[in-house]
Image (cartoon, rainbow, N blue to C red; front, side):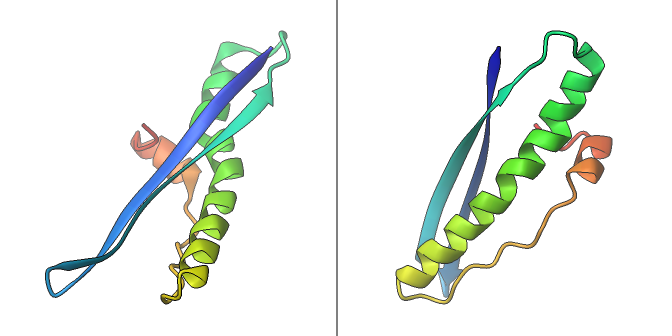
Length: 91
């Protein structure tokens, strides 16, 4: 059984009230679930592991896209998805 997870990053750069750059990137990861996996492990995977696997690809896409657009590349810092999950912020 495959399960799809998506992660979306949206941002806007504004300079003196003028929007310079605005983008939204969504990436989907398709993961195969072993039927013997317990629900509590699946929940952790959905909240921590799946976003942590997908997020570096979003970071690279945004950096590459902005560089190719001729603007300063947007470099998004790595995120700690374990801490987000502890705080209930992975929604």
